Image (cartoon, rainbow, N blue to C red; front, side, top):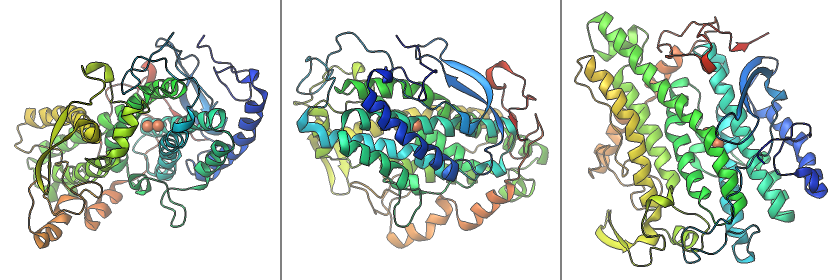
Length: 470
Ligand SMILES: [Fe+2]
Ligand SMILES: [Fe+2]
């Protein structure tokens, strides 16, 4: 098990050759996907040779194979984590019963919606990032961007496989729609707001991969708990790829902080204007980018009180991330004290699961913040980066539209509106960041606003030509 068949048109470890109808249907979708990649994928880099990793098996050891290939030749395929023998449902009212190998009729539309919503984010992020290659700060970063892009393309394959294999004609139609919606499109936008925000600079890319891919991690972890076993196995393998995306975000921001501290030291000043004049990202500006992308990503968890998440949990469709770490997996007796603008109240835990997930997500986000603040502290500066409160700038849930400052305190609406350009990137801030974005493609060299990474890819030196442009 777990070997991937690369002799097939569509690489897979699901024995596609044993189901001719499904194979034909996916082979029909494949050229549409490639056409989408051609039109909406990384702009102008189809001829470049990129040092990419490709999965060769799904076990923990050597699934990654590295080699230089053109992105359109990447072997997108269908890879599921190995089945767990006699897997049982781990939460909800059907806890302890055998996991489902087929979709129960009563959950068909809900499961389809969960899969489509997850699937929609994958190509959306490729579309959001399609112009970034033109302003890469180094070949190392360019390669990482493309690695993320091809893997998000594969995550789309993962969801499309489930739609085709388990949802019949509806599933096939949804698979087509996944290529028809586009990020930021006025008529046919992507489903979730965050995935319609343009990512036109690399500081936004690092924030997106830090905050938004981490939301992805939490969604995938909760779907990996699903009673629907093919979904669980699909998400478990996707998580192994997702870790690299968050690595790009965390190390990207670390490198920005490192470079900024070097510039502050050279200048003997922490004056933001002087830091900017020296071509670096001042720390208050970085804070604004963190505020923007963190608050935008917090909305992705949904409303604090949600009957959908209660139903999805009770029926076994979607668990909590790392369900095994909890004692109570049924949650019919528990409550959670929730503070909304109307005051504090105890709500049934089942209805508050989005909030439970949001809280553990924020804890995970804190890890990078601590690291960056240690760097700032070691450089003997008082400034500290922080995460915005989960009440700040929300457009979904109990705090939607509420005038709340980044610390979480309700304030006067006029003051809120006046203060916003000081909390999230203003037009002038964005213009400054864009002015820093200049393509650097000499092997081993870095743009002036970011420090080099600590090591290269797969033990290669930093000077390696990770992308051969011609
Ligand atoms: Fe993904
Ligand atoms: Fe990702």
